[in-house]
Amino acid sequence: MQKDLTSLLRDPNLIPSEKQNLLSEITAQTETLGMPCYVVGGFVRDLLLGQPINDLDIVVEGDAIALGKSLVEKYGGNLTPHYKFHTAIWDLPSSFNLYPSSLDLITARSETYSQPGALPTIKPSTIEDDLRRRDFTINAMAIRLDGSHFGELLDPLNGQADLEEKAIRVLHPRSFIDDPTRIFRAVRYEQRYSFILHSSSFTLISPESLAVIQTLSGERIRHELDLIFEEDNSHQMIVRLGELDVFKWIHPELRAFNGEYSDFLEMDTSLDVPASRTTMGYMLWLMDLSEAAILSIARRLNFSSDLTHSVWGASQLKKSLPFLVNSKPSVWAFALEKLPLLSIYAVYLVSGEKALLDYLSFWRHVKSHTTGDDLKARGLEPGPRYGEILTKLRAAWLDGEVNSEKEEKELLNRLL
Ligand code: CTP
Image 1 (tube, rainbow, N blue to C red):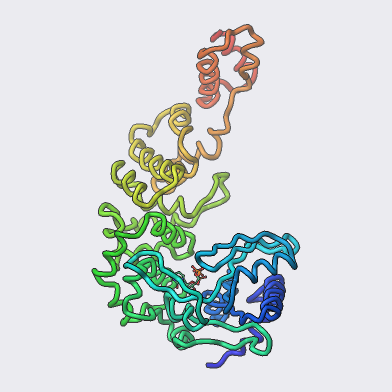
Image 2: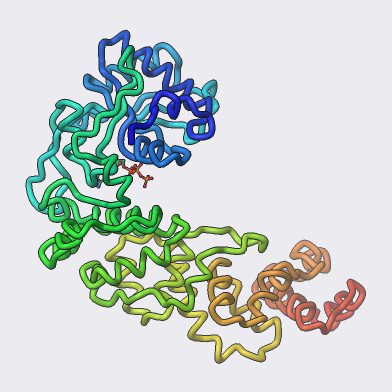
């Protein structure tokens, strides 16, 4: 089915007018420089699906860095060129009023892989070659923007037919071996759009290509998993990765995601807890593993220390719940206060332990009126006694032994 691309490109429901304006400015500049200019990849895929586009994926047949420099000269902003890749990131001037506020400018290029899983070697080339280096047919289309070519679709690999067939199909048999992150990407698109990995591509997810996952850096695998946890259907995606036997190649102790936890990937943001879908995803996935397995997986996936602390904290808390149940609020509060709030929230979700919710909602905010300055004013020498006294006062509030400022003062008098 032939779509009228010029009207899709001008549809403000698919491409907000600020982004359309930016595209026009860039295209005008490429015309001045005599460079054919295209939008590619996810932009074209989502436009043809009639879905709002996210990123502007722009490719020029010509020097993207020279284009970037001329755009900065004309409109301002900052340019970060990557000479090795012939690309540039343009931090847009605030006048464009756009989010995200930066843009990748890419030179059409061909890619070769020196060895499976390695990053490719690239060479400036034609748009056709650029499309042929890509992951799936549905991501290997371009729409030309400059001059009288505005709205022309380039689809040398029949991506449009696959879009209509709802098929994810790689471009050549070595695709997953060259770049096994495409296995994660295939799963993401499959579940996001309710598409099916075409049988000819499915068979290419073989032991040979899966084994290359072992050679990928932790950073690259984690990036793919992060993207999955940011999606609405992340649970189905993780399940699908499990069906494809991916986990053991990431780490021998990685297990399936516990289906009973899947609803908790959707976070209730009404609680005043800093939300992160990715951190929640990793916590729910890993918290029931042993401490040693968690730390080893965290190293393999190059987790930040914060993320490791969150997952480890959730796991430790879950394991210590039986010892805390029926404790006084102050015992809970002092046990919980060194843990990330999100870890506590995750364990609340999976356990339903009400004390954890009480802590998140109320107890963590309870403090004594007395401060260190008050103790100093009362003539107490600074030292560890300060902490002890303030802790006792706070515990008394938490446990309901003190209910007014006056009662707190009386307790303080007894303690001093
Ligand atoms: N690409 C690829 N192989 C990869 C990563 C990316 O071929 N391993 C190509 C695809 O053509 C993709 C484009 O680069 O469309 C841009 O990549 P990315 O921004 O990751 O994906 P999008 O297509 O924009 O999709 P998403 O909606 O998931 O961001």
